[in-house]
Amino acid sequence: MGTGTNAIAQMINNRGQVVGWSYTSSAPAPLCILPLTTGTFIWDTKNGMRDIGGLGGTCTYAIALNNRGQIVGGSTLIGDLEIHAFVWDAATGITELPTTAGLFADARAINENGEAVGWGEDPSGTARDAMLWRKRGGKWQVTDVGRLNAPDCAVGTSINASGQVLGYSGPGDGCLGGSAFLWEDGGPIVDLNTLIPPNSGIQLYETGQINDRGEIAVNGLDANKNNHDILLIPCDENHADIEGCDYSLWTRPHRRHTAPRFPLFPARSNARLSRGGPIDIASRGARNRRATSRDKAEEYVEKNRNSKAWTRATTFALFAALSRRANNCRSRGKAGPRRDYENRKADGH
Picture 1 (cartoon, rainbow, N blue to C red):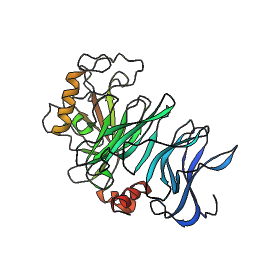
Picture 2 (cartoon, rainbow, N blue to C red):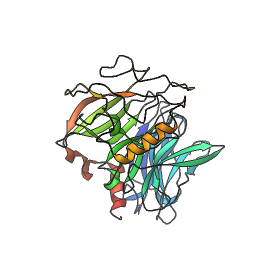
Picture 3 (tube, one colour):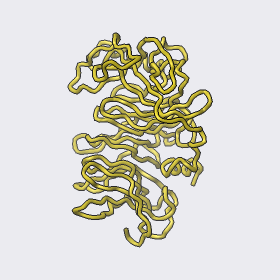
Picture 4 (cartoon, helix red, strand yellow):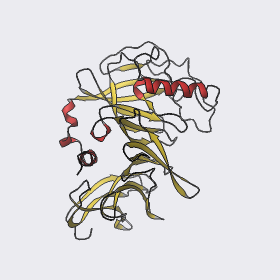
């Protein structure tokens, strides 16, 4: 696009629309994930390549695309001192998403309902929280999902059709080094490690995606800091006969949709670990949990104990799947452009 020399295709949806990045000139872009002035394009067979525009600065990068053709990501404002989250669609063009405070935010995922998640600076402007954006009454509204622990930061990475938000929260660059979390509307942010047994031998720390069945792809570390690809499967009426599931404590949610609701306390069953096979996700109680997450969970459960909108208990079956790789594969050099942007921001660049 423009006088740029390179373009990178990043994603495609079921309509055949392709979205990616393109240099638009040779001028530098100080806050961008690429070094030069960068724009985002959408391509289809009818309209060809189109520049989606930006928020006034030298960098606009798309991160996610849904099947309605909606795009989300981050874009710099005039002067390139701030990056804000945006949403784009063909009818309205690019729209800046609201923030609670601060100078920085971007959106990382969007579901088929047009709800987006990502991160933004919290109301104090000093820390990063996971954020949720939804359009209500024709206007975009932001919900501060929060973070697991006050000194840490958090990033929302995925949202399914039921509005369940998946992400990770931690103290390191890019909010790594902590735990994976799950959030549902009206409830506190919950550490996924509190929903698995303390003897599983796995620390869930970085999330991938949650699908519309509530199944979660997540990364976990063993005691030797080897990385495992993990699949979390909820034990509910939509996942019958899963080995290791205890269905006796699950009750059917009285909801208009059938997507499973997750408990804020663990169910009980026998736990064992077998390589390449199921790792039961049952817990024997509140011991070894993070105190802050436990207290929030117990308080919320007590408050909503009689609510028909919640299941009383759900367990997970967890599968250590596909591969195991050394922790140094998560180094900056192999982390990809999104992580590189976070590292650049944390380093003050």
